[in-house]
Amino acid sequence: MMTNNDVTLDILHVNIKTKDKNLFTGIVSTVTSRNERGIFDVLPFHANFITLISEYIILNRGLATEEKFEIDKGILYVLSNKVDIYVGI
View 1 (cartoon, rainbow, N blue to C red):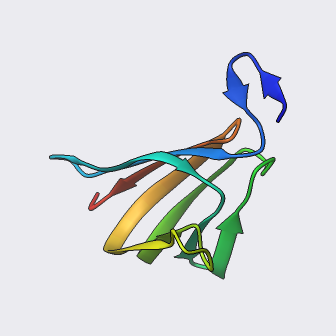
View 2: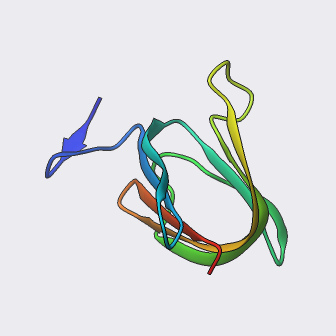
């Protein structure tokens, strides 16, 4: 496991929030969602990225710890293995 300024680089730190509450905060291996181009995955070491998302967010897709959040719309930011997702915007 490599670290860079207290950020672990082989996992993703994820926060999923609505205007009113925090839906998820934790560490995952993958984030999957849909944008205007289709389904995409965010994996560790992903480039910095921002996109509008819709339909769903899946954490740890294909793993025993998989979690799915149904959404209408949101925005997803990736920066240095941190993923911030704001839904219902």
